[in-house]
Image (tube, rainbow over all chains, first blue to last red; front, side):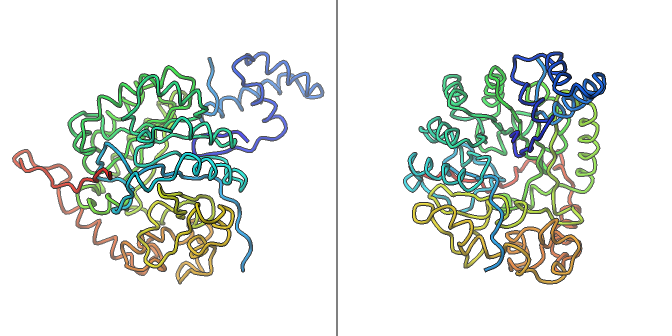
Amino acid sequence: MLMLPEKALRLLGPSLQIVERCDGRHTVAQIVSELQKLYAQAKPEKVEQDILEYLALLHEKRAVNFE
Amino acid sequence: MSVPPSNPLALIAELTHRCPLHCVYCSNPLEMKSGRDELSTAEWSRVFAEAAALGVLQVDLTGGEPLARADLSGLVAAARAAKLYVNLITSGLGMDERRLAELVEAGLDHIQLSIQDAREAPANEIAGARAHSRKLEVARWIRRHRIAFTLNAVVHRKNLDHLEEIIALAEQSGAGRLEVAHVQYYGWAFANREQLLPTRAQLDRSLEIIHAAEVRLKDRMRIEFVVPDYYAKYPKACMGGWGRKLMLITPSGEAWPCHAAGVIPGLQFARVTQQPLKWIWEESEAFQRFRGEAWMPEPCRSCDRRAQDFGGCRCQAFLLAGDAGVTDPACSLAPKRHIVEAIVAEANARPSAPLPSQTVRPGWLYRPNPA
């Protein structure tokens, strides 16, 4: 569960793997590279694009911040 | 017995009714509990643990002013230990830098700070206290911590024309979210409704401002907007449905299905000091009374929207129509809709701002601070 003010998001699969890495230590580039390894059968540029879109969505919900 | 209910997701913990502010739209009941009747630290801690075991994910620490409790950081720690996401809903009065650091250290996840206006004099008039400049200082302290921060502005007839300034103030405050919430007419707000209900023109203008700000601030600040239901076509899904998602514990330990349930005659509220929270949620009379659809009259019973808005708000049905069991008069399909229409018509027949020549101040009914 990802908890937000007055909201909770249930995370599964890749969404969980992305959010777990939003820990203030991973850079976006590191998250992309780790997920590309986990999903080696997928096109690397597709993995990157999906991650960037997902992070932008979470940022819009104020679930994550970029530093 | 019908199907067992789903588990509650959030617990609203009204830690105290004590508050240094006297806001004219306070959602607390007109009859408030004194500090002597409040639950102890140990009792609240047990309630948080029981709530988490029942499936609750979040706790809203509210009041009154939660900072009036000297044990607040202990309560935050207890809620955190129960693995709840901890929200603090505060006016900021009673906060200082050291206390804020203690709360964050104790595990506070999110702080919601209220403002009454963007301008000092009208803000203080609504709060019945000199509070505005202090709040801005508290906002500066909050920004220094890694904690989710929402600024909350309750809007109404007297401040809706300052909405752009309120949004600008929120931008400067560094808040990640701004909640613009129209007054909901319960408690003290119901008593002061005539002076708080905006005109249609004010509402329409405010919607334009909100939509423009949402687009402009997309990457910087999220805006949540709570509509005024007297102007809505369909009623709000109050509390996400009666006894469906939320439970509220009063300062003295009664479990209520919502903030205002105490106004409904004949409802019996169980006490967390006498019954387990699980039993209260699943079995107690108050939580079962309007749960599900069996209680619904027409037109709700056969309405396509009954699983979306649950017939609206039971307390509002009682306050406006004198019967908690009828369709919320805020619904355009309600047989008692004419009550809301008359109130709205009256509000629109008066100018929203007093004429400059009028020097007499409105007579607010201010919320007192219980001992």
